[in-house]
Image 1 (cartoon, one colour):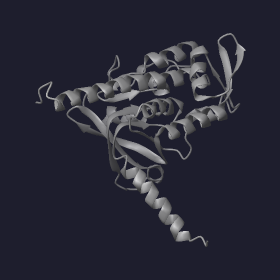
Image 2: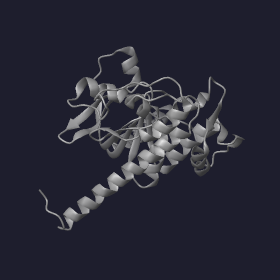
Image 3: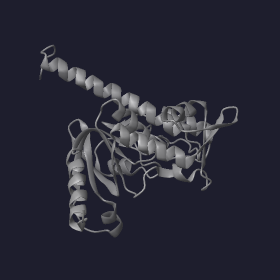
Image 4: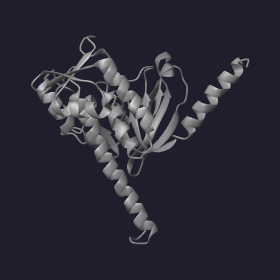
Length: 275
């Protein structure tokens, strides 16, 4: 069979557009495809929820690829190792409470598991704004990253979701939009982005999980974005906290989404009043 170049083009455009259209309205949108965002997305999709990730870069996986200063090994603690084990990622004990893993194996496996669970990842797309209704944030506004880089005047498109996750790490791209454009304060002590503090792996690993929570109506923070938002320490190339943060947020959102399903079902059955 002779291959036709135009049919290859047609196949790519049709399949991509079908995927894109199918994700115009969903349960959760995650901005940023680092390890925390990918982990959150994996557990959500595994539990049957519709979730997609928008990543401004061509590659996904955030900073995990490079390990520490391009030595492609990462460190996780005891609890983080349990998630590596669940993903089937090899790890070796280095000392009591310290485990190392090949960073390339780790992040490529997490990416693959997330996609196979049903997560849709759209790379080279930036979140440049959010959608707002009376209940709070109800989606995101997106554009090609190349449009942003070239500073072209091209209008964006919008995607609706029940919840939005800020997983852009240090840059806090979504929260900066909220601070600049949306009425109301963030759920921090100051009502504003508090900014990350200097390196302290012990504090950072603990607080990244503690800070994984709702930060604005229908907006949640995960991974390094959580510490940067709530003003606690960075932790460098130890990634157990990132994975645990992702798992914690997935559990929070699963509970909230299941609560909405139960509430709506009761409305249908007439158990509660419909306003």
